[in-house]
Length: 160
Image (cartoon, rainbow, N blue to C red):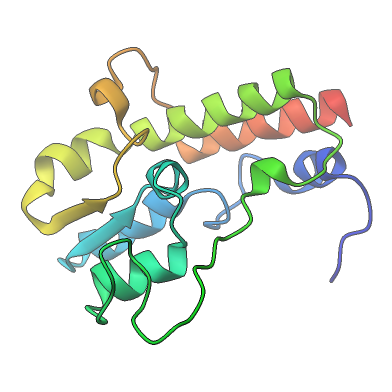
């Protein structure tokens, strides 16, 4: 069902500790595949944004092997597309709260650092790496999905 309300209200309502999905936990989903011995390709969206390329083109060019130009545009398309980044969407969250949410997500990403960078490194490819696992997560306290979702929910409820 469609949710009517602000972004912070949505975060407050839907990000609870027992939530078992991958809306904001793509590395958790990737680990599920990796646990089944499936090779994993992770795309760091901060690198995609930094390189000003479209995520669809990154997947087509670097994952699927579709013929592309040097600047990662699928050959045969006449315009370069760029995915609108959620950070530029209008929400009711101010810059400080946004930064706090981003830091929680980075902490959740770092929860998977050792698995993808050590245990499963031979079977993991990270494309456009820029912010993901930055500095090997040395200055970040890792958070499990449960703990991260609890913090996200608290932030949403506090500001909503």
